[in-house]
Length: 314
Image 1: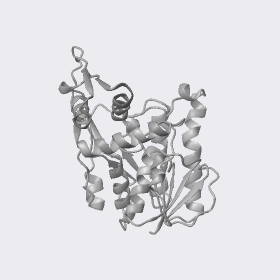
Image 2: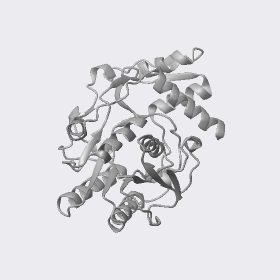
Image 3: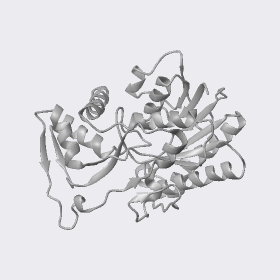
């Protein structure tokens, strides 16, 4: 495979996927309505084609593979629309891209889902074989996408699959109308930059954090595999870090930063709650990929520097 189309390429996750594809030697056709992400000051060259278009009206672009990473995480209330229209904002572009991939005879297409499909699962270790239990319009849209892709693969013989990331942090995260809420780590860094302090709520609460460039590298592994056995793969680092540990790592390279740690409420101490784990053995078995980046001062500094750039350019 030589050229990959990626939708939602201007977004946080999309821009990191574009960077990983270019690093792996692919030609990339990046599709989005505009390209104001500061990442594109570094992402350039003859192997990158920028296509300003929505997903429904994409022009014909010769390509071997496609990654659909365009999605709306904003709620109906945040967008001032009905739940039905909010659902359609994710489903209609997905169906258009699905048809586009078939019409363009694209060999392999990958659709980026979300752990939002797991809202109602009580288990702490989640396997791809578990049935989704979404709550909320976004989770429902992603569940429909996962089930549709599995049908296209199993019933209609198409080489398509979904990937399901967990909590992601990393460079070039910024808000836009389709994604108005930052991750908890980005909010910490934004507070450090604008207020000079981080308020650490639920200090012992742990999340499984995955460095955004690793999502792109895992997708490269899926693109390079000759054959894949499943319609769904989970992408997660397996590393759990507490809110307080994240804040202290940020403080380590911002020595003037103050931390205000809120005491945990009775019965809500995150240390007593087993953090959720997205099992990734299926990915390892089918692709061999296991190169997850451990959270460190380096990864958080990269995240900090890019958010600082976004703030300066605002």
